[in-house]
Length: 206
Ligand code: MN3
Image: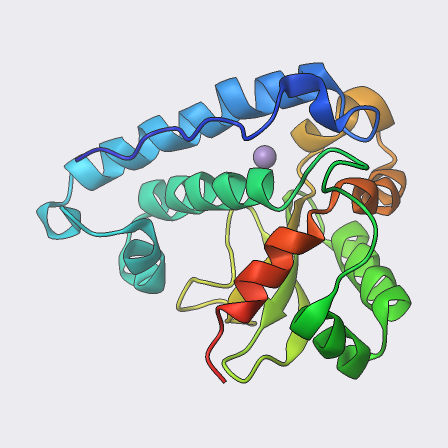
């Protein structure tokens, strides 16, 4: 059973002006599709991966070749990325609520969380991702990863459940923001789907 490219949960233009439609079209139809296709090549080459979920594969990624690491990460990361965004004013933007809001207060507040996340994302050299990560007890941390690594991988510095993640590869922002990654990071909060982030957070044990 091959992995399939999941459809975008909204129109290409739905996140504009924060993320323009042409960026979304190429990001989903070209980049995410390529990660999906190459992940399937990697899975087909290793009988031990047959029938495994992507989360199971990522959890033992240290024993996998770069083809599976880079494209398995890219497959999962982009599926997550589409889901934790929504059009501004129609699920995107605003502020967290419920247990996630409490956890963010314990972290130091929403302003501090955003500042630390933006700083990590801007400071990630080259391509990668910025993350809000929850450990098994629900405590939040901010992290960044290179390339398509993510907190579900068994050999990254900060492991846990991703609550939010922002793609800081240039393909994610260059058409609108050119080289201004910090401006993209600051604008991105306008399309964060806090309801979805809260549902993920509520699913953590403890
Ligand atoms: Mn990307």
